[in-house]
Image (cartoon, rainbow, N blue to C red):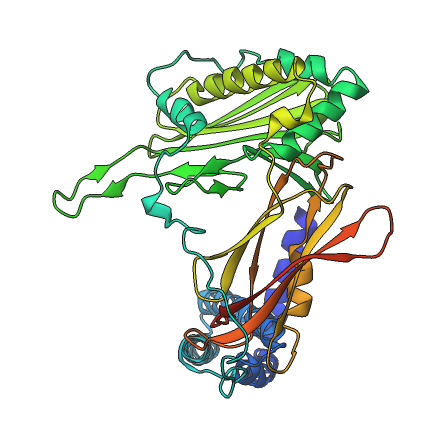
Length: 444
């Protein structure tokens, strides 16, 4: 710690003795920032230059902070002239930064440099479908809409409670995970049941999350589910309940950074806030699976946690006696629907399919009249793994949310959307669905 303090003192002393040199450093940073500002609203490179602009602004803010500290130290040594010069420099720096940030905000809000769809016309000889509404529900308009969520949220203030030291268990899942056949049954069930989504990332690897449903009955494949009170415009009072929960099952068996390094079969972290909200994270082992439960409400006692454990254990108890895969889900043909997202150019692809093997689903898009590939690199970032497979006609549910960046709001053009499946076996990727839509691009 002393080394760090001495290092900071050395930097401040150098700055005080050579304050004109940092002036030239700031001028150089400003000169480098201006081209970034001009290129921010370009096409493929907009994200890169936006990030570079942010870095430049951050460096200039650090520069101002260091200059201000130096000026104060010099003023304490009664070198008023030099201190005033540094404060003047800080004021100029601050004015320049504010001007650049305002210019950046104006550029991103009002300047349109994406002319992709300016001269595009809708194809007259191709029938275009329209994306459906209902894929996104405004945050403050979410309601308790499915049975699982109703019971979980309804337990707040009404159900049994748990102390932080009280251990939790999922005996049915523990019994299933004790055998390879049982684990396979669990994974098949979680793949087929729309109440769950199987996910994969490089950190957590394979894990499942409990879904919810919006007010229109559509599956919401989110890891966290939130309900917040809204303000009644007539009375000015807040109405509704404050609740947020998550239920996840991790199958790789390795410890999570929040789970006491895997040393204990159970862990609970309680974090009360100043506004009366209690945040509770619960970890437990169910055989080789790790279970994570998040419980956020204004009532002590982990009541949502108790109810979720009860409901999920009941669910896996029923699974123990099931031998027919078709019992997990109704049989249906390949079904793919495109929904509008939160803003124009943002979309959600809702998928029911059974490729017959495990692999990856991905979206490809192209403009119809010229065949231009749309957001090719970006769409590659929105692939989803398919773990459920069956030789029967049972379908498995997946969702892909993606954004089309070419064009702007209200500039509609025709696009062909394709759904591709890449098998884990190494076999060539194959197209399993395609449709033509009238879409618009997302305005940066």
